[in-house]
Structures are given as C-alpha cells and as structure tokens.
Length: 516
Picture 1 (cartoon, rainbow, N blue to C red):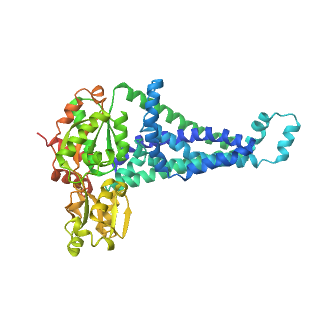
Picture 2: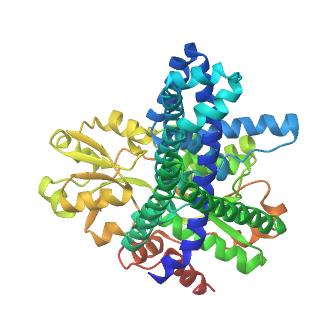
Picture 3: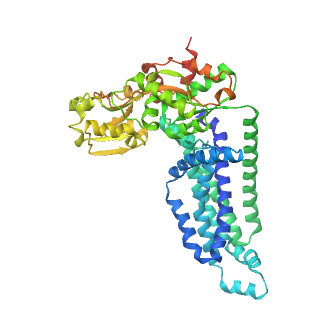
C-alpha cells in the first residue's frame, strides 16, 4: 500500500491537469455555442446532433482516434509552421476529453436560456437593452443554475473518462487501474478507483455549491465554491508549468510499455539500464496500445520500447506468409523498420513471446488435444477467449482459414481476466502469450502450431532516430542486454509479478543486479 500511496500525489495532479483543463475548454466552447443556437434556431439540430454523436463514441475509442490524427497533423504542422504536435500524451487526451464534455454543458446552456420567462426578456427589451445587454444582464444570470448543472455533470464524466487516458500516454489515475489489472495488484486497482471516485465527488459537490449559490443569489455560497475552483486551477497551472520546466531542463528518454506484465518489467529494465549506463533521466509511458506505441516511436514521441518481430511482421507489414523462418522474419522486419521509418533495433533480447492457443492441461487431456490441428474437430463445442486485439489480428484470420477453426463463441476480454477465465473453466481456449508466468502457475498447456501459421515473435529493443541525440551512448547501453533473456527466464520474471505479487520495478532491478 505504501508504494501505491507514494505514487498518488503525482498521478492525482496529472489527473487534475487533464480533467480541469478539459472542463474549462469544454465550457468555453459550449456556452458561446449554446448562445448561438438560441439566436439561430436552424443551427440547433446540426450542432446538438454532432455533440450527441461525439458522446456516443466509446471514450477509449475517441482517445485512441486522436493518436493517428495528431501524428498525421503533426507532420504537416512541423513542415509548414515548424511546430511539432505530440501524438501521445497530454494533447490527444485533452482534445478527446474536451469533446466528451461538450454535450451536457451545451444542452443545458440552450435549455437554460430557453427557460427564461419571455416576459422578462420583453421587459428588458422595453427598457432599451440591446441584445448583448439582455443576454449578459438577464438571460445568462437567470440560466446560470441550469448551465452550472451541465458543468457539474460534465465534471463527473470527465474525471471518470480521464482514467482511460493512460493507453494514449497521458499519466492519470488510470495508471493504477491498467497496471493493477495486468499485474493482479488489487491494491493498485482499489487505490486508483477510490481516488478517481473521491475526486469526482469533490468536484461534483464543489460545483453543486456553485449551482445552489447561483440559484439562491448567495454570494457567500458561489464565492466559496469559486474560490475552491480557482485554487484548484492555480495549483494545476503551477504544477503543469513546473513539470514542463523540469522536463525541458534536460532531455528525458521516453520508454513505452504495452499493457501486459512482460512489457512493464521490460520497460523498467530499459529505464534502469539507461540510468545506470548513461546517468540520464528516463521516463516510462505505460499501458500503451500496440499500434499506439509503434506510431509514437515513428513520430518521435517515444524513444524506445520493446516490440516483437511477429507483431511488426503481421500487424504493421500486413504479412501472412506461412512457414517463414525465424531468421527470415527478423531480417525482413529490421530492413522494413530501417528503410521505411528510420527505426533501428538495439538488439534482440534473446527470447520469443509468441501468440499461442492455450488450454487447461486437464481439459486438453480430456479432449485428446495436443496440436491446433487436434482442436479443429472439437472447436464447435468450445469457447475461446482472446485479448482485445487478437480476433482482429491477421494471425487469428490465418488460424481460422488454415485450420478451419469455428468455435461456438469468441470472447474478447482483458488479458489478465482471460487467464482467470480459462482457469475457472469459463472459456475452454485462450490466446495465450508463450512467456506468460500464469501458464505454469495455472497448469496450462500450449498447443503446437503444427502448420506453422503463427509467425516468430522475437523481442526487439526498438529505438527512434532521436535517441542518441537525447542520450548519447543510450543505444550501446541497451545493446548490452542483447541475448540476455531466454524464454524460461522471461517466464520466471513474469511469474514473479503475476503469481508472487512483486512489483515490475523490483523484478527488473533484481535481474539487472544479477547480470555479470
């Protein structure tokens, strides 16, 4: 618990920076737009319709969409104006959260102004007020309680949605939740959920005080609420500026990590290796989506992360060649990365972490299944679970086509829950990762890919073109890890986190300390 609480001030501050700025921008966008709608009624269906459509987009999808959009836009702005836009981190999260906050504030602004007694507006017009004066002195003050109620709703939504900013590289209380789920750290999940809930309640009650003060014309109430909000914004602004100034003092190497245990361990290992060998700072950006991490490295928003040759081969290069040797895949992947994207490898770590179909050992024995071909006949009565992306990957399409697999049901789920599901018998087969520590801990067996459909997955330390500029000697420091980890070692490291409850950082540190 003490380890998790030590992280709380930084992650809570980052969460506040996201939520408060998005809420302010959403309000500044929505209130004037709402006023415009009340003046030009023909605009209402279109504007409110667009806001409603944005609200129906799943929040995680809206955040993820920002990454490729900003990557594409960043190339244009850099060449045209000399301004680079970051495709991961604060900017995509702020844009998505701002859009997500618009609907309740916009709708309440329109409703509040429309709800003003027409007689009062007519009286204001009768005493010679202009349209602007009538809006400022009559309509907005009377509509303020309704507008503030919309801000209150948006605040709760934004605080909750901001926890999903972690996969696009923006630190938040979601760091607790995503990493905790993957490493089976219930304490981290509970701390993240509790902190987000308390923050949402605090903002909700503060804005409620502002709302009731506006309704009762009580300067004491709305003044107290406004003072609290101003203090929060002052703290958020000061911490943001201080953080950016500190980051700008010395280049920081940014290390990406996907959202599973092995990646957390390896990212900690790379960060420790760089700090020890170069003496420079290194920052981990955790729980990124697979393509998000690659796009960020390509765009220069990440400097290094570990990816797998099969992922590049199948997902990025869109190759589905059967029976391609491990050496051939590695050669083609490295050439593609260098020629097409200027990305280099500091070395292969020495192990593969392939996709594999896994079953409980007793269930496989009962069905007489040892290979994927053996599974073909029984698949129609079985259910398969896969991680979020597995059933959309080319490997799965190739497995379906070349083995004729047709399961009774397919269930996409969080990778951590996927292993629990097969252990409990809720699904019969899962898309396991071959070095996962839970394979041994849960007595699972991996089925042989006897037709060679799944490509090899060598773990590669990929580096962006700006790494040496940020940290001279970094590539050589990372290259010292080449061949240092075999499959058995990686599975043991994963098990230390998943089954023994150790932190990824402590596991990585112990491994490096044991190297010659």
